[in-house]
Length: 292
Ligand SMILES: C[S@@+](CC[C@H](N)C(=O)[O-])C[C@H]1O[C@@H](n2cnc3c(N)ncnc32)[C@H](O)[C@@H]1O
Image (tube, rainbow, N blue to C red; front, side, top):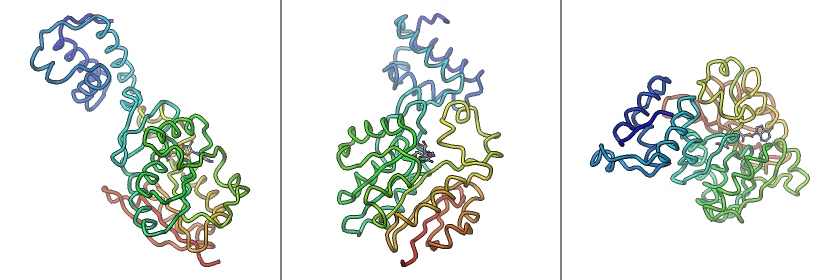
């Protein structure tokens, strides 16, 4: 381990390590790690650059900087990610919430805000960011959150307790929707909110190492064209979604059109909205159950 005697040496050594590893935002990331994980503030750095650094702090710092130099996502190192103004715990094995996914929350609130007691299913809940944000914003809603990953569900429950909505959400482990049909939910779900895996095999090859080597493949890999999991969801959904109920789905580049033309979608649902993200990529597909 390099030995540093002062804050400024520690800062410079860490920046150099991250730059050499190809971390783009090295200077900011070093400051975030110093502040969040080690409690060394920018003020301390600027006001007392020559102040000595405790050897134990130095060792902890470089364990963290080494993890980042291997391209582990900063959020796994710091342990949290902000989503919809709420702070979520994240850990390896569970997808880090992305800013574009907040559009699903916004659309769901827009559609369901006036409902008396909507029944909302967040399928593939991961960290719980969608279910929890909706529970916080729609106090009358009944919310079910499911995932195939038991470790994701466990973390989601912890996040829900932290935000005071642990008791408001029913947690269910299982593959997509079939296991929910037996829970008296058939035809009763007002809206399914889904950010399911949608990375195609071609896109997988070009993912950055931060994502490909550290985030769970189960959360990302959507099969050859990325839509395998959504096709299965749409096959199973008519049994669960109420008459005129909704499904809101997040998709990737060039997938919205393809999804909107899927026979399993057009047979039972109509497209009511496709919303682009801040880069103009059609990102959220909102469909409504035809009258049954
Ligand atoms: C893209 S991540 C989204 C996580 C979270 N909803 C978010 O927006 O950050 C997809 C999630 O779906 C889960 N998943 C993947 N395949 C599934 C399946 N067949 N049934 C249920 N959940 C699944 C993964 O474990 C993962 O947590």
